[in-house]
Amino acid sequence: DAKTTQPPSMDCAEGRAANLPCNHSTISGNEYVYWYRQIHSQGPQYIIHGLKNNETNEMASLIITEDRKSSTLILPHATLRDTAVYYCIVRSRYNYGQNFVFGPGTRLSVLP
Amino acid sequence: DTAVSQTPKYLVTQMGNDKSIKCEQNLGHDTMYWYKQDSKKFLKIMFSYNNKELIINETVPNRFSPKSPDKAHLNLHINSLELGDSAVYFCASSLSDRESYTFGSGTRLTVV
Image (cartoon, rainbow over all chains, first blue to last red):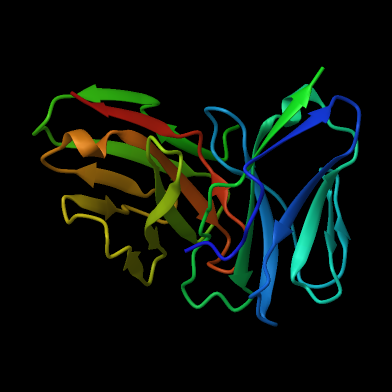
């Protein structure tokens, strides 16, 4: 079962930053926070992951609170092509056979 | 070049038939997976497999069986198809079971 809580949907204006929150209050010290997204009719796409430090790559930034109980995925300049369902997932860094468990995610709609 | 490719993209078949979905990855990954996304859009792991171990989600009926002729392929065989098997099936792969997954574009199976 998913161990994260996300809002079911959000809107964002094109060109603005999209900030997608995720609560993971029961996260343990050895669990990473991962973000994937699924654009309509496509397979999920990996975006970013982090343990406790903030992370940035060419797609997004990940801000993790100091207590690690929540995080925010930031798409700095959202485009229409960023409309998708975004999944926040926690998974052990040691895995031991633990697969990615996808919850319902947040449906982000980028509006023109 | 598609990293994880699935064929066919669409499959319509009658109840009771046996069908296969093929998956190939050209990433040199060691572990491959099958996920099922039902009409409610929840993604659920079915199998994970590397050259050492097959891990089966206990909720998957034994009519479903993965076959791996080599490290780059993990095909999904389904016997005695039922209406409830209608879904989108996604193949994925990862460098190891600790890394992020790369997903294929999915196979939409419709059982009539």
